[in-house]
Length: 450
Image (tube, rainbow, N blue to C red; front, top):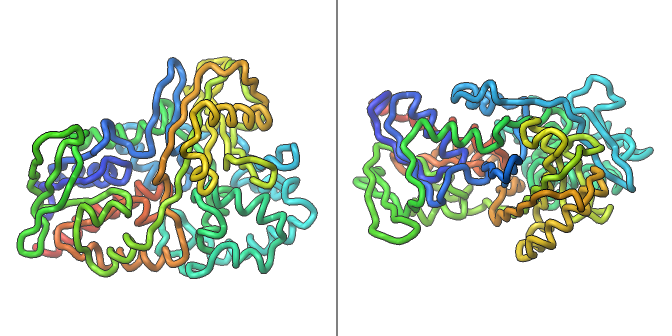
């Protein structure tokens, strides 16, 4: 590889991670080509327009404590479009909403006490003490710091010290909201990160939707959509290019490169890159994914409750994991006097509903919205369903050690760097950070090799 400006990079995958890496490399003077097999960039961070309404088809929010995301937005011209509305969150349990205010200094409003019940203070004390002891380490951007609790399931950790009510009403919904997977799938440390993510961060968005960020990042590079990478080209143990073919059919092409960033979901990596080093092979082989379904609805009228997100415990009969209003991101999601409501089905519930018709899913979401937010199905003006079979990587036990090993050893192939939320955390913030880290790793390695 070559250091500094003048190098040629090919990024495989036009999701947030790949585009973040592309933008970072471009800022350092590299010529960057992004190959994306879909018709548009963004991955699960896209925004569709339905009339005057904005529908985020995958990721719904950014969180305000993650500097990489905010900095990326500002550096790429979105600083004046970012919004952090002061909306409360909540948990809907036993027919009523228990609201809480993230990062509030008042303990009475920081947590959903009504939903937690009389034993909630003991549950909160146990989990809070564990979180505070390692607070700086339980940072969504730095999973390689999540060492304490990395090898134990969240359910095993919580079952010893918390009540069943807490696990069903608070912990499971928090895990599904923050990580898209439940307590029997994620690690203890991942759950403590989810606590910080849910109760310590405000949510925000862009005036033109979540898809604004990948669109802005994409302007830093040459992007070819409808082109699927089929392999990397190696000479003497180093990567020198990428082969790709049009998804609609046609002749394959070869793109020369001094550096290749592979930013596709973990299960797809080996099919593109071939053999990898031990650390890379391990994290690729041991990363599984959870599905998700997003239902967006536009209503005439304003919601009664908080913008949210509002977490929906399955013990209360909900099949969706959480619901939020567009004004929890930006007022521009809907014209005055109307609102956008988004509902997310995650993990096993989403798996069981992937083949369900749009009409049935929309009816389910309309019923939940009426129950939780007070909307009227008769006033629904538009709706859209998006299914994601590989929505988010599962932060299972051992994730922190796998990420740390990857950071130290890299891909094991000269000139190849891996990126994606599966190399960090299963969020947009994790994807942004992974792309920036991949670019920094490649630049440092190139400089050291000169």
